[in-house]
Image 1 (cartoon, helix red, strand yellow):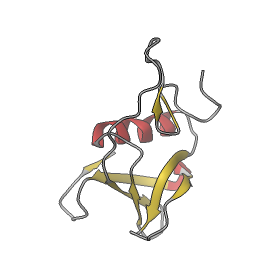
Image 2: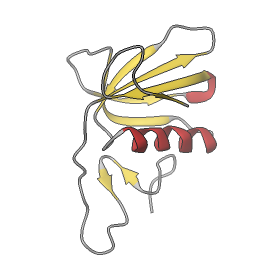
Image 3: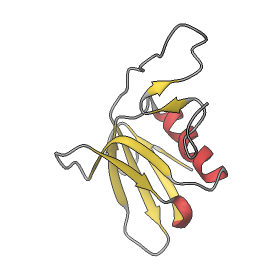
Length: 110
């Protein structure tokens, strides 16, 4: 079972539910997650917590459905050098774009 506030299938980069085969560490890719809050400027986060865009979007959607913050363990704000854990309060976010590239036409919106 996962800790409160974490999804049941993922915790700290280790996939849960591997049915006795031990923890599995995914081959994570670099994703750019751009959050657009109500009445504010976009916030861009470079993240390596997910195996791809679908997994990242599902984690965002699940956090929204459960009315909790999104927890990222391997993220950087606006391409800064330091990698940190980041907690994003989704209460005032109106859209999220997830892509492998940082262009205006790339990615998916929730």
